[in-house]
Amino acid sequence: MKVSVIIVHYQVKDLLRNCILSIKKYFQGFEYEIIVVDNNSPDSTWKSLISEFPEVDFLALDKNYGFSKANNIGVKSAKGEYVYILNPDTEIEGDYFQEILDFADNQEKFGALGLRMHNLKGEFLPESKRSVPALINSFEKLFTTFNNNSKTYYRNDVDEFGIAEVEIMTGANLLLKRSVYEEVGGFDERYFMYGEDIDLCYTILRKGYKNFYYGKYSLLHYKGESTVKDKVYLDRFFGAMNIFIGKYYKRQKPFQYLLMKIGLKLTHSLESRKIK
Image 1 (tube, rainbow, N blue to C red):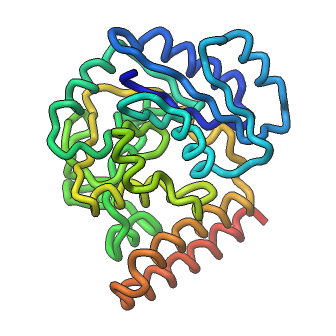
Image 2 (cartoon, rainbow, N blue to C red; image 1 turned 60 degrees about the vertical axis):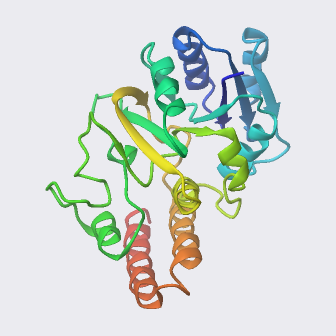
């Protein structure tokens, strides 16, 4: 088994169906499996997909455990040399995955890889390639955008269609060696949703592996279709960022930690006011 595709699902049955169909259409020339982990979706109509796709392994959880733990549960069932963490609101767009696997096979100390993503309008999604959050680039992320070719949070120095080593990719599409995933302990389950992909990619780097952005090929990401932008969303997002800076900056770089903490608190407050 070459690849185990892990899809954590919540309330987007039609998008999940399209995602599975795109995998079946374009994953050619290698053995793969699809594992769907449903995070206790309130609407049970997704279960109709079980009979439609008997070759897919569907796991129904007894409650919503969040993105990190659900993926870890899915990977425990995986048999592939690689695991491909994939959002249900994505679609593979071409017969390119064998080339990507060949690329990964030929890298020394391969850690993880993410493809270029675009939305339904065809607009590039900059979270496809990122830096590790630090003081300056966090300021950019929270308050402004630097439109230049410097190494900013969204790695403006890396061409959108290029192939390069980067620090952080998104968990919406993340290819990893299963052995590396297991070595680093998978996703940190303290993150319910958001931030877990940053933490995992950074942990992989700290273990001496390399991460890659592969902009030569792309996939469609509807982005956030299963997410309601409410106070719960804001609390989870900023809570995740607080976990990350507390984990990596509080003791190691206390001054940066303090400034980043203040920035997060201020932005959280401003964003919360917008939805009241």
